[in-house]
Amino acid sequence: MINSINFTGVIKPEFKNVGQTHLKATPYDNFTKSETQECDNAFIKWAYDTDFMPHGLAAALTEENKLGSGFTNSVYKIPSNPNYVLRVRNHNSIDDINFDNYTLVNCEDKNLKSNFGQCVAKIMPADSQYPIFEILKKQKGITNSNPPSSVVYHENGSIREGELPYEALERKEYYGKCLNILANMPQESYDKLINELIELDRAGYRFDYYNPNNFLLDDEDGKINIIDIDKTASGYKNDLGNILWALSGIGYFDTFMSDYDGVKTDDAAREEAIKNTITVIDKYTQALKNKGAKYSKDGYEFTTKLLSSLPFSFYLRSVNNDQKMQKLQEMGVLD
Image 1 (cartoon, rainbow, N blue to C red):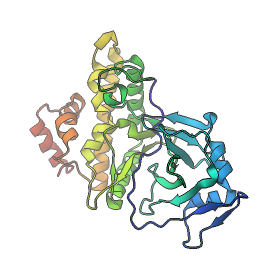
Image 2: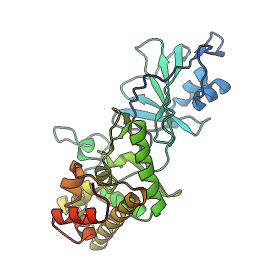
Image 3: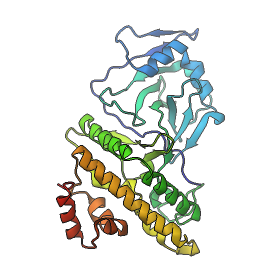
C-alpha cells in the first residue's frame, strides 16, 4: 500500500526558553490552571476549557480514530478538535493507562507562524513507563511521490510488512499522479513554499527533505505543505536545490521509466511524467526568482542527481552540467 500516514510533522524541538503550562488532574477530574505562568497556547486553552483530560484523551485513542501508522509513530484524530492530531510511538502500549496521571506541557515555538505540522504540546506521564503523547498541528494533503527504498525494504533486502515493492505499478501510477498535481499547482503555490522555507531558516529549523513524502499536496486548496522539521543551530540554511530534488520525486524517476520485473508504464505516461517534471522545475525556479532566493552549488542531491537528470537537461536544453550551472547563474538563481 502507498504510505498515507505522513500528514503530520516529525519535529524534535529543543526549546530552551519556552515556558511550561500544566493542567493538573484532581481525583474529581477537574482541572486547575497552573498559577506560575500564563499560557497563550491555543490547544492547551482549548483542553482546559473543554476538560479534554483525561476522558477526552482516552476517548481519542481508539482504532476508529486512528489515522494511520508510519514506521515510528501512530497518529489519531481528535474528534472534538479538527485542528490537531495525537501522535504516539508505536512501541508504546496504550492499554491500561491511568490518564489521571498525565500533565500537559507547552512546547509551542511562537517563531513559527506557518503550519508545518509542528508539535505544540506534549502530554507527559508522571511515570516514565507510560508513553508520551504529542499534540501536532494537523496538515492537509496526500503524501508526495514515493518514499526512499529504505522505507520499503529492510536492510537485508526483505520487504517491510504492508509495503508494496518499489517497482509496483501502483507506486508508478501514484508517482505520476503526484507529478500531475504539482504541475497543475498555480505559481503562487510555489512562491508560498519558498516563503515558508525562508521562514524555517529564520526560525532555526531544518526541513527533512530526504523523504519526498514530507511534502503534502493539497490539490483542493492548491497548496504544497511541509512536514517533518527539526530545531537546528542558528544560521542553518535549508538547501533549496536539494528540496527541489525531493519535491520533484526525481529519485524515483529512473524506476518509473524502467521495465524492471515487467512492470512497465506506457509511452504516454512516460512523456507526461517528463513534461510535468519540467513544469515543476520551471515553477519552482520561477518562485526562486520571485523571492530573490537561489540554488546552491553545495547541494549534493541537487548537483549530483537532479541537475544531471533527463528532465533538468530538457529544461535547460543541455546535457553538460557546467553549462547548466552557467545558465542558472545567467538566470540569477544560482549562488
